Length: 339
Image (cartoon, rainbow, N blue to C red; front, side):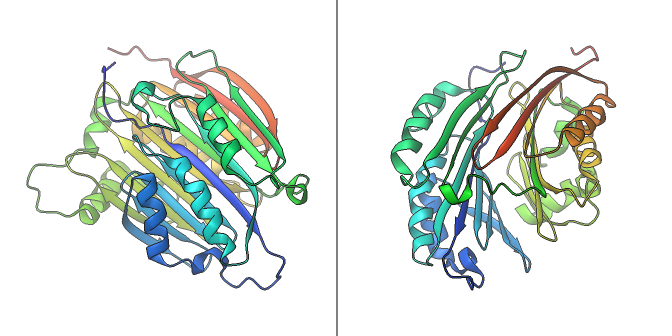
């Protein structure tokens, strides 16, 4: 393991909003780009590419992704970004649109280089204190927990908070899957390095990586917005109706990392297959899968799909959170010998 390198593990924040006015129009999507840029400046990242449809807007960032729905914001950032500094600005901007926050969820894995993280991310305890101090008192149902695994380097950190109106109103039809992969197969990871002086920009190089790696076949219905970094690294957002997916890759040997995240619906039966396709792209030595608000059957099917790739399930843990529902955390390691 490298002593120091780029931190692939993302921090993820989801904010849910509501309005007393039933006619909110496009809601948060009314926020102008300058306002979004100001928030991202505080987080220490920028927009590199964007794509939207009638349901939501997606932005590929210099460090991961941002999704803006009429009443929901999802932002995940990697490296040494200061993600939680976006909480108050997003809540403030929402108020200008007569929207008030009703739920918040913050999740992340275990950092590879925790000592490199700045305030307020130097520890989960510090993150929780910062959140407690920066969210409104109306989010009165709160819980912070670290879900462990048998792999000491992999645990799942969750802080969830909800208002009274949201405490018993967890969406029953939608769920989120967050897959984190480390120790990527070196041959597969090399596909995310650019050739020197390739004459391409980030968009065209990203499009080529999407095709040669098979990422474009994970969900054939998704419209993809992709970007390749120089000299290496890759990000993509996928749009499939009102569902998003996103992939981020740090391919350097010694601290290689990739993530796949997707929102699923009980009305679509393809999640386990998509997780299997995503893991196959990277050939990781270790995989963790966190599902939020998914059925027990779906968690079992995802486990089976990952095991079909020669991975062994090492741990299965679960916990309940206000305004989020059940979070299930599973970890896997490769059965193959690794050099």
